[in-house]
Amino acid sequence: MGTYFKFLSLQATLFAIFILSTTNFSSTTATATTTPPFKKIYAFGDSFTDTGNTKSATGPTGFGHVSNPPYGSTFFHHPTNRYSDGRLVIDFVAEALALPYLPPYPKNKRNATHGLNFAFAGSTAINHAFFVNNNLTLDVTPQSIQTQLIWFNKFLESQGCKGTVSSSSQCKALLDDALIWVGEIGVNDYAYSVGSSISSDTIRKLAISSVIQFLQAILKKGVKHVVIQGLPPTGCLPLSMSLTSEDDRDDMGCAKSVNNQSGTHNAMYQARLQEIRTQFPDATITHLDYWNAYRSVVKNPEAYGFKEPFKACCGSGTPPYNFDVFTVCGMPSASACPNPSQYINWDGVHLTEAMYKALFHMFVNDTFSQPPLGQLLGMKQNGR
Ligand SMILES: *[C@@H]1O[C@H](CO)[C@@H](O)[C@H](O)[C@H]1NC(C)=O
Ligand SMILES: *[C@@H]1O[C@H](CO)[C@@H](O)[C@H](O)[C@H]1NC(C)=O
Ligand SMILES: *[C@@H]1O[C@H](CO)[C@@H](O)[C@H](O)[C@H]1NC(C)=O
Ligand SMILES: *[C@@H]1O[C@H](CO)[C@@H](O)[C@H](O)[C@H]1NC(C)=O
Image (cartoon, rainbow, N blue to C red; front, side):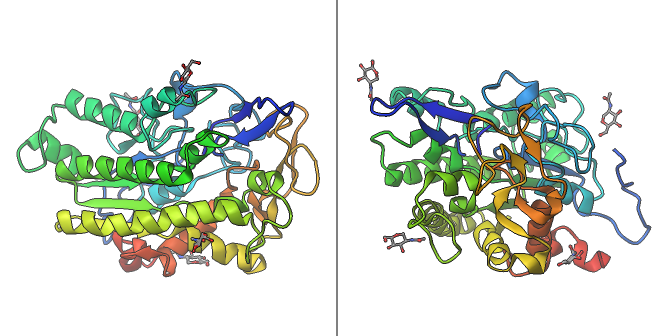
């Protein structure tokens, strides 16, 4: 998801607006009988996974008001540059492994004992050059998953790891007990190309190829455990709902055209994963079914404690979605609901801590991960 909103001036209209996209740590010696399997996490992705990179690098500041309250109000009680009121799925993963919350990469290059977070809000799957070559550069974040790979390689090299786990003891020390977490990536590619002549078929093919290349590059280093995920039903975001007409709705009540795009993307991505699994039989590649987990919540929000499936908690006050691109969360004129835990959506694009927590539980407990994430995280045998 994007860091901010993109304002595209189209000739015919005044504006056509599209989104870009859209410490109190537990001890690692919690009990004598439970040894968490992973000592580190290296995470990649976009704003759904970014734990503070955007504001600590030279990224866009655009319309991102993520450094202002009420971002961070729920758990950290101050803005942390996370695009939510509180913790993200990756934070719940860190907690489950009894590891500290992942530090963002740019400011923590030298202190990566427990891993690093390379996820960068606004990142695309496709290389930035593609957007440049197609004149799609207005407020586009130049980072992509390939940039994150470059950062990761630089980090590894700075620690003496230049080969693979089997050829280099430095690589083994860095990667052998690491979980590789590849969060949502690809949503911004569609968002940045809205209104252009590039078809969503083209975006889908290029985006998925880029992510597959990224996965191959990481797996070639000899990592053993990778978690990947599809896209959420992006048509359910207040942003998408507010930009589409009331007759563009699917059985979830969400923007059908937009959901078709992310659903089609996921189907192709999952098909390509089979190739990767065959190519790297020694690695465990866990797939999280973000779409269907999210869908379960939208279909039955009350069962998960939600009252507002489609309305943003923090926004302009504009009905029916509490979303208006000119008055977004973090601006002085926007305000947050008093009960974010009853909302799926936080700011029109990103999710509330409550939703990230519900999704995490579903990935861990239910049938929305394959192979089961709870087992991978050692949660089942820990009885947690
Ligand atoms: C490194 O990070 C850990 C937490 O992960 C922290 O306790 C420690 O103080 C940090 N060290 C430095 C030198 O910043
Ligand atoms: C991009 O813009 C330049 C200059 O306006 C133009 O010459 C070029 O044809 C455009 N490229 C595309 C792919 O639209
Ligand atoms: C998307 O729409 C096409 C054409 O209507 C349809 O064939 C396809 O099944 C839809 N896919 C998803 C994932 O909704
Ligand atoms: C399983 O889900 C329930 C809520 O649905 C949650 O209370 C519980 O903590 C979850 N278990 C794990 C291991 O996350």
